Length: 121
Image (cartoon, rainbow, N blue to C red; front, side):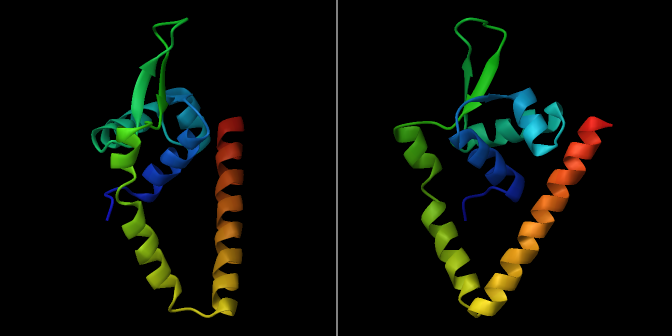
C-alpha cells in the first residue's frame, strides 16, 4: 500500500486545498501541534508533503502537497489504494454500502462536534 494511516490521509486531503501551518492543521484535525509535526515529518519523508517558509514572515512555515515529480512520487501508491478499496466494496450490495455510508457520515459528524466542543471548552 502507500504507507499512510487515516489521519495521514486526512492531512493530505486538507493540504490539497492549499498550504496550512502546523497550528491550522492541528485545529482542523483535532491533533496537538506536536502530533502534527510528527505526522508531517513522516509525510515529508514519504514525499506527500513539503514545508515552505512564508516570504513575508520567515518564522511562519506552511505545509503543502508537492507539485511536479514530488507529487507524482507521493501519489504513486494511490492506484493500489483505489484498487484495494474497490475490492473491499465489491463484497457489499448497494443497500449495504448506503447503510455503511450513512453510518460513516454520522460518525464524521459526531467526531466534528466533539472536536468543536473540546476546542470551545
